[in-house]
Length: 90
Picture 1 (tube, rainbow, N blue to C red):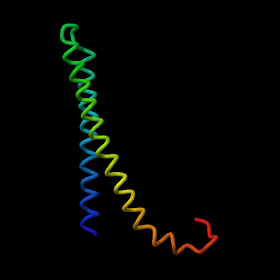
Picture 2: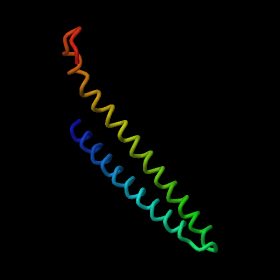
Picture 3: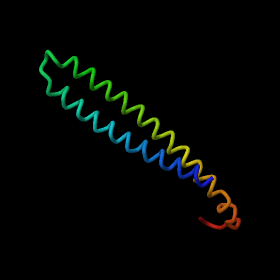
Picture 4: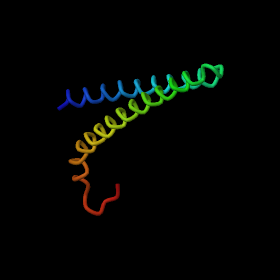
């Protein structure tokens, strides 16, 4: 179980870094589109939309992994929660 958890944490960190990289690519694509000559604007607009699509996919992957990691942590904490005396405040 420990290796599975470590692998999921590493995968989540990689996904985070990938998402941040795609965020940077969106900014670069936007700046190129906004500075493009009118004759090149269509091409750069398409590149910007493609960058947005890649960023969205990276964000979805990261979000899915965060949910999985959250569920794993919540499952680990359930035995601790059951030790809290009835009526006690948390």
